[in-house]
Amino acid sequence: MGFLRVLKSFGSSSSRSGVIADAARVQVSAKSLGDDFPNEAKFFGLENFGNTCYCNSVLQALYACEPFRRALIERAMSSANGTSTSGRGWMSGRREPETLLDALGDLFHEISTQGKITGCVSPKAFIERLRKDNELFRGAMHQDAHEFFNFLLNECCENLESELKRSGDWESGRKTWIHDIFEGKLANQTRCMWCENTTNREECFLDLSVDVDQNTSITACLNNFSAKELLDKNDKFQCDRCGGLHEAQKRLLIQSAPKVLSLHLKRFKYIEALGRHAKLNHRVVFPSELKLPNLSDDADDPDVRYVLFSVVVHIGSGPNHGHYVCFVKNNHRWFLFDDDTVEVVDEEQLHRVFGSTVERGPMGSEHGYMLFFERQSDDQTEKM
Image (cartoon, rainbow, N blue to C red; front, side):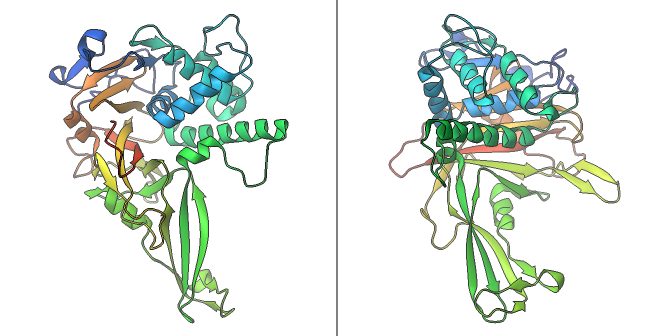
């Protein structure tokens, strides 16, 4: 049985998930943390409202993302109406958040201004705003953490754009500070097999979804993402140069790497023989440091490198049920956020979520699902 001996089902907060062998787990407290962490470091769990582990795990990953957390809290503090909307007022009074971005900023501000270093807060107002904005998250059904992450980032970007338009500061093509953090650019290259001309088109992304195979690595997944694809038969390419409809080779390469790279492992796949989606328990090794193997020849920074700082883990046997937790690295130590519980863990425990070398193997049902890497500059020492 895997280290996350699953007792919690369907993301319910009514029972714990049994996290890691006792020898490897330490409840977070001021005593267990010692003097290694500054006062501004916060390790707070989030209350589960029945099926909101998908949300809690992603929120913990985003709180661990320093540039995102810093910008969001600064925005919350500069708000003219200084009240909390996350369940408790951090200044006098309360108000309903006008946008999902408001609710998220208030929640992060509440965590950051706690007088102690550990504890638990309620994201009630954020959940209420989320369910108001998107009916997908209103029911008691199990939700997908990656779908929530995509909706959250795009909705917050739209909130910022709407603010700029109301203030008259909006310009066509202008990017938000969220784009500055998460957005990268792909070079969509298509080579005509008739005239040998290569057409380049730029595509922007906030995260990348990669296919997974058995006994592979993140580097191999990224190489597969950028593998050449033959366009033939009904998919022939209309060449810009020769004007003909010909066979072509297409590939996607990273041209501009983002400050924060979010990778989604596509572990849920439709199996035709089963007539439904199933979970792929494939072993996928992810490193603590990553050098992108699929950069274009004209990439902005050919030597870009990343450091892993958070992993969202799915626990369960299928896409329609299970539980989500989040690993976070802070000051060279790893923490496990499981709803309202936060524990210090050994780094080797992270290796237990790579997956099994055989389907339905002995490693359990805990698998890395979303990976978050922070870009490191040449003169920057590792902060994590």
